[in-house]
Length: 207
Length: 87
Image 1 (cartoon, rainbow over the protein chains, first blue to last red):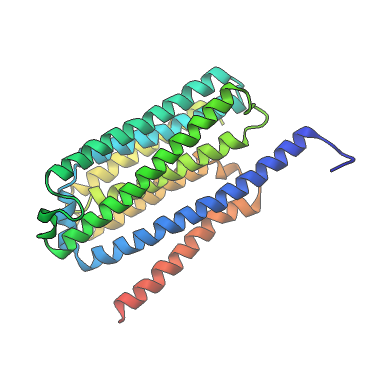
Image 2 (cartoon, each protein chain N blue to C red; image 1 turned 180 degrees about the vertical axis):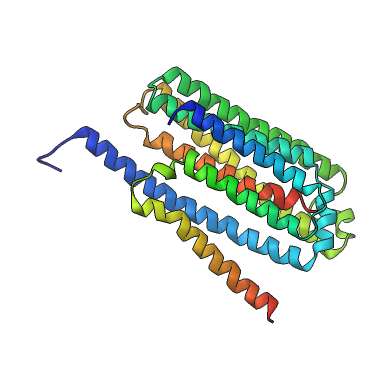
């Protein structure tokens, strides 16, 4: 390290270490949601009819729209990374990062409309109407609010992270040859997308 | 890797979403959940390989992490279900 001091090699090594660290974090996230998916599958196995009835209450349109929004945001973040790293265009990178954050915001707006509609129909944990429903139906909505709520929290965290990344790109703290912070922010955003890919059919598409 | 490749992957992801949605309205019964999960698995594989760039990853450790996560989850889920089904 002392005799062969090479900044580009050093930056590369740092990038690899940062990436390994972030992937380990992503694994712990997968296990966190994995436990919830396991709980979901067992309750669904025991109450198939109630889960179907619960799913019928959800808006397939909103779920599908949000799926498309998140998939598109994954595309824009990877294009932002490519713009800075390969094309070395700061302006394009900032544009696509801001688009990604805006899409995350769109996702949250759709989600909030969805939740508001559920609240108005008396479908929220502890509501008198929900408490009077069959056991499996209550479990379905408990899992729905917990899992999509935790996911929405991840979307918010991802947006905060990407805001910092945008700021760093503008101030040139993240440069084309030193992009590991941006790379890791993008990886986290993709994980949030992957979790939604599984939440979507499990909650909205029960037949 | 260029923009068109990413856009192609995105088109694939959107088409798979449409396919899941269609499969859900076909009244497939018990097979429906299997179809949905297979499509979700294909979609996440596309995201992991192309968007998260694991297809071009050279480090063995990073290549192994996702299979390791899948194995751990499979053990979790498998053991829980043997308890649930044979209790």
